[in-house]
Each structure stands twice: as structure tokens, then as C-alpha cells.
Amino acid sequence: MAFPLCISHFAPFIHLYLLLLLPSPIFIVDSLVIPHEFDLKPPENRPPMGPNITKALMDANNFNIASSMLSASGVLQEIDTEKGGAGITLFVPTDDAFIDVPATANIQSLPADQKTNLLRFHVLLSYYPFGLLKSIVNPFQPTLATEDNGAGMFTLSISPVNGSVAIRSGIVETSVTQTVIDENPIAIFAISRVLLPKEMFGK
Image 1 (cartoon, rainbow, N blue to C red):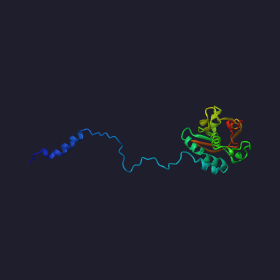
Image 2 (cartoon, rainbow, N blue to C red; image 1 turned 180 degrees about the vertical axis):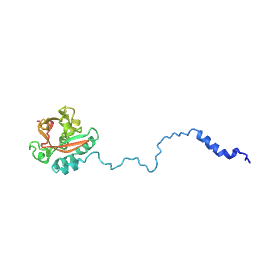
Image 3 (tube, helix red, strand yellow; image 1 turned 120 degrees about the vertical axis):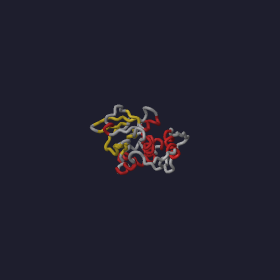
Image 4 (tube, rainbow, N blue to C red; image 1 turned 90 degrees about the horizontal axis):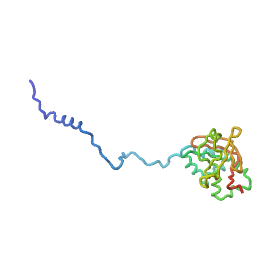
């Protein structure tokens, strides 16, 4: 026995089929909708990029004077900023190097701005691992001090010598004696003399 079909029995299925044929609606909003558990604010205690310079100098046990001066002058904070670009290369004098500075230079009695310039003079504005430092094409390298004093001022002459690197300030010549850090974007090399710029001590 056949049962008569009633179209009303299939109405819900027909409605669903028709809905599936329709294009999905697109809504335009004027702001980003973010679930409440998401926090887009930058973390306040984000760790600094690269190695900790102060810790590295203190751990090496022979750069206490340099570490103290870099922190007190604010140059360490500048280095932290600069290393986010092309990186930095720092030539850091040993404690003995500061002790051996001629009395006529009298570094400790310099005004604060000149002390800062002296420290900036030890910083190159690019990351140079030791191998690349030995192959620098342009021997006259601008320093962090060049930024504040103008092109051609406070530059260092750098050239390879006997498997190391010679650094000349115009008054002082020294060479790299140790690699303290070589970790992109920071290279720190120990030097046996404080680099005295001719712009400050050449008179």
C-alpha cells in the first residue's frame, strides 16, 4: 500500500537546502574584534636583545673601571639602543689601561660631556666579528662620538697587524688583546690602552 507524500513534511529540508545555496554574508567593521583573553600590549619587562654587556664585563674581571664609566655616563644605554640597528663593536680598555693613562690626560677630571665623548669614541656603529674587523676596507671608521660631532671627527684608524688588529686614535696606538663577546649584534674586544681622541687631547 502506497502512502501519499506531503510536501509539508519536507519543508525544513528545503529551507536548509536553499540557505546553503545563498552566499555567506560579509560584515564590514571599523575596529578589530579581539577575544578578551588576548593582550596586545607590549610586555613591560621584555629582555634586551643580545648579550648583557655589563655582566660580560664584570665576569671578565678586568674591566671594572670601563664598566662603571659606561654605566654612569649613559653610554651603555646608548649602546643598547644602537645595537638594534646594524649592531655595535666596542673596544673596551682593561683596568690596567686606565691606570696607565698619562697624568696629563687626567681623564677623571674631565667634564661629564667630554668623558661621554671619550667613551663613545670606543664604539663603532656596526657589528664587526674579529675576522671582518681584520678586513675593513675603509680604515677611518666613524664612532658613536662622530654622530654628535660631525663627519670626519672622532674617527678610528683600523688595520690588520700580525694576526691581530691595530687601532689608532691619532694620539694612541693599541691592538686587540682579547675577544670578550662576539655574538651578533655585539662584538666587544679588549684593548691594552685607552683611545685618546686627537680632538680632545691633541693640543
